Length: 224
Image 1 (spheres, rainbow, N blue to C red):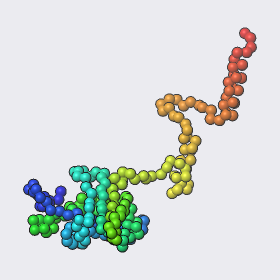
Image 2 (cartoon, one colour; image 1 turned 90 degrees about the horizontal axis):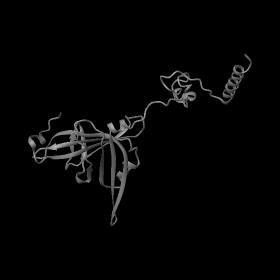
Image 3 (cartoon, rainbow, N blue to C red; image 1 turned 180 degrees about the vertical axis):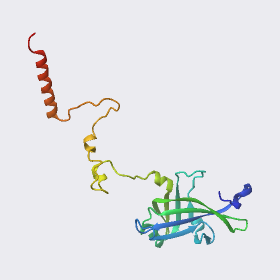
């Protein structure tokens, strides 16, 4: 666990700021083609791990991150207010859903120097919302990003193949492992019991009934 001097010794007042790194991928399947945006709720530009974070102060609002010892499935939100029309292209003109969102909390000492930081959230943007507030002739836009943690995304992930011939032959056209699935789909199996011969077609059932009738007549007919 990281040692954070700013919160040690049960301090009653902790000066901190949220630092947000948003990685927008411009092309599906190509993580190298991306744009990185960094901003914070700090009052000045700070550098964390070689990355400068633009100060937004009170214009940035970060939702609550769940505090657990273990990794949990939690969501959070991020709101940017005071956005003009030019910056709206970051959301409307890019593939904002699926972007990587990283939130780091930085801690300041009594002289307001950044002394340490700890990563609080890593996840993927799942949705966004844009609201507009107009005062006189000025428009004020607020962008809200909703994000889910990586653990939540992995839990909801659907993977694998269906148990049918078409899905099984997608990668290997000669694979016949699932060719008999349609004929077994509607059958009921009593595991542990001896197999019972059941007529599967109407013609087979008629043939079996005729055979049973002939056997009955043979056994009951004749004299002593």
